[in-house]
Length: 302
Image (cartoon, one colour):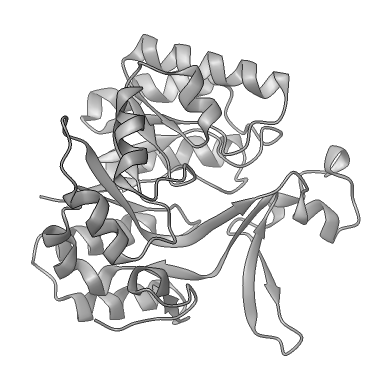
């Protein structure tokens, strides 16, 4: 059975909202795995390390697997120190650590590691190396097409590894040392006034013709459209996928997870599931182009 993971919250929701979200997902959602931790910007840190530990101890008795996630771009000594502290907490609580860049893998080498979607694993040889330093699960980079995923999954290897696929949510594309959201308000990164908090699902950028192009989320660039592979569910089990990741959005998460669970279990037709998800997406178009070897913003109906 393919498991469902709720990825780390990529937006700035604030401490109270983040705590409420994780408690709801632990108690109300049909997800099997929860990722917890700041991935985008260390200035946000809506949850302190003490908050993370408190939530982890609350969630563990629910039976859901909890994974601690690291920053996608480590740029300072303070962020490096936070990375070490997060690794120590993961070890103390016996939790996996999702490393979202090679700094995280270097710090936590030998511990139970997840290679996040921002670690560039494009071939079986790279995965073989990562397994040697402790990686037991990898999340495929979001731009990989199905053919490349199949090549990595089917390659022979000495030790088993879990394969996780980013299956629903705005695609996390890149990080930058600059903060796009601060720049949009003519603010410096050091005096950003936490403008990200005004955009719970990111800030849409548009072309001169007014069409949606990308989503700005602090230092992160994301897709403007919500990516979904719900119509491709029949292809995922033969492909060898163990886990699908649903990336958090500010509304309708329990309902979205429930639709995915029903579809993965064969109790809901993928076409009907797509229609229901569209209703929770404000009837905005989805995208899934990368999976089908097309431009990422395209949508291919299975």
